[in-house]
Length: 126
Ligand SMILES: [Zn+2]
Image 1 (cartoon, protein in one colour):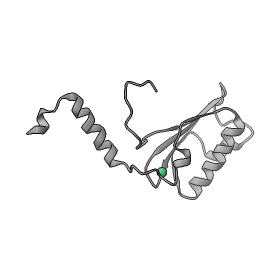
Image 2 (cartoon, rainbow, N blue to C red; image 1 turned 180 degrees about the horizontal axis):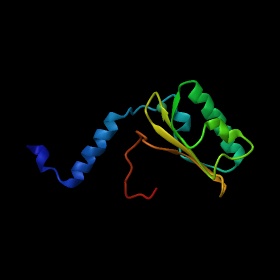
Image 3 (cartoon, helix red, strand yellow; image 1 turned 180 degrees about the vertical axis):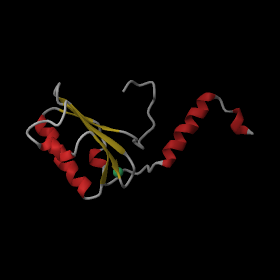
């Protein structure tokens, strides 16, 4: 039984491959434009991204899976909270995304959850 003989290093590789194969490898035409982590510098940028997201959710491209408040509340003159987070899932490829804003300290970011991208060296700090 060759499988039983693999060392832990190989097991790790097998594990990564399994995850890789369960996801779609091809770039997703629906969410590819958003499949990159970035920081959002201004409330204006944040709100304009939220407007885009409301649109993609309405179109059925993204599913809003978790939210600290309704998306449109972010567009109101008063922030709905000090920390606002929204999690999305792409219907086409299953990737998850998180939009997080710390309105108290004034920073926001867009980040990717399960990205079926290249396997990265886990020792690299993120
Ligand atoms: Zn996608």
